[in-house]
Image (cartoon, rainbow, N blue to C red; front, side, top):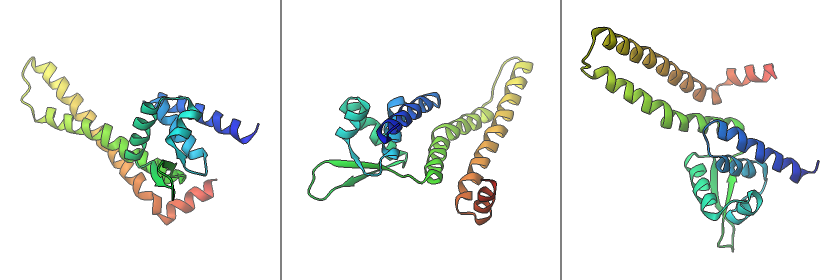
Length: 168
């Protein structure tokens, strides 16, 4: 298998995995393509390689920039914008965890806090059941949030690096 075939297999597989995680397939494919290429690519390069429209490419590249997974670059003497992905896997994973926390965990925590403060009326048993559920969910989501915070802080931890190195 040559390098271009290997890259395209990676792009297609990353796209499939991304869509199972709730990320648009084309966004995951663009991310994989930029990860797999040493040189920055233009929007046109992305469109041609993955066979997507300009609008689809632009929207997803902007979203990857918002997630801090892709950076925009300019080449001297060219008007085109070029894009590259941060190839540091630990940094990439941390950016994804941080963004998912912001988009997924925080809204749930906000909702649970709001519901816990509400004066809920109805059948006492139903109200009690609902309040217990909200409390358990709140505790679980807060634990997930704390675990993700610990993991995010471990990047620069000397002990963690040594432990991971010893495991591999």
